[in-house]
Length: 273
Image 1 (spheres, rainbow, N blue to C red):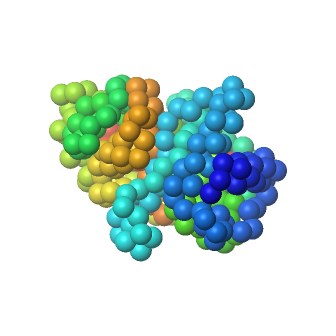
Image 2 (cartoon, one colour; image 1 turned 90 degrees about the vertical axis):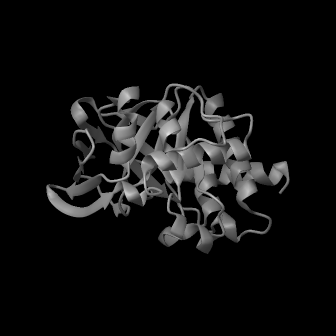
């Protein structure tokens, strides 16, 4: 696609997001649109958002499930940027979030990582990814789908802000270098419970994110370096590493809680208004 066509798609997505309106025709059904184009659209939106004074603070992962890669003809996971106006810290592991100007919303529990140094090596694994990590936390990713009936392809995900509406981060637990082997083990085995208004909705586990969120972080680092060699994961980046359960539809007035078992992370609660 030409630069003019890429800007036109970016403008369409941004206008729909600002107005809280749907994009009736997914980009993936349009001639000339592919994953490479999707990242160009996403880069355009990033440039525009940063021009308003906001800052990119990290990446959100999509399709952290290898079983889907063959079906969708993916070689790896995909990602999109998150910003300083979409990430929220939950003081005391409890937060309130407004759902204004949104379309079709779901909530996903995820493990969030904060980096203390860049990850540039193609040989990175779960252990070395955690060596570059300052902290980890439970998080709630709020995804907002602009496409009817939640029907979209990976390129649509990338171009449409990664479906990212907000990320709420719980208590940040420091990654002690001496404890990294234990974290690697725990991240591959821990479980989570999702509760809505106190009622258990679903149980999930770290294995739903590439068998471990630490492995997901490593895969993301490798994929970013392959696609954008001059833009690796960097110091200070926040990474939301893929959902641990299915996404669940949300509405105003609900209170969601995520509890972990097998990781030293306290429960996280979110009130939706």
